[in-house]
Image (tube, rainbow, N blue to C red; front, side):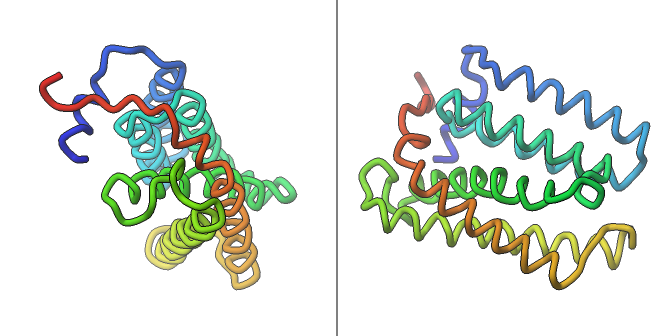
Length: 194
């Protein structure tokens, strides 16, 4: 799997998601200049989030969805929409974490930890995707807590917010789990030496 990351990322095919990747690089610079250091951490995570789908050779629609939602998520943090726009936080948790759970599932199936989505039983795939969504969400919530306590106390954390976010993450994972057989199909993975 790791041997395919580089060749797959560097494949000559241009994708619509590549425009979003370029916008993410520009956004990193703009956010740091306009909003400071905390935005650097957020946008750096976004940069990672838009690179991984290309490395995995995900189908173009899946790739674009992940990239757009990652970029929207990053700007939502920088512009403080999570605390100012009603239910925006929960919507992004459902949509983005669901897609990230699907990406995590694809990685898991590549290493043989979970059944390949197109071949696996739908209920099993959905349950495993819920677990992936909860894992992604728990990791994010711990990162928020660390950020709040050690980087910038204005990063919003709270018990009700955390529980609501995790519920949204699990629901997003469930939705993605039922969509995984379609999302994980038609990948373009370039093997080394091809």
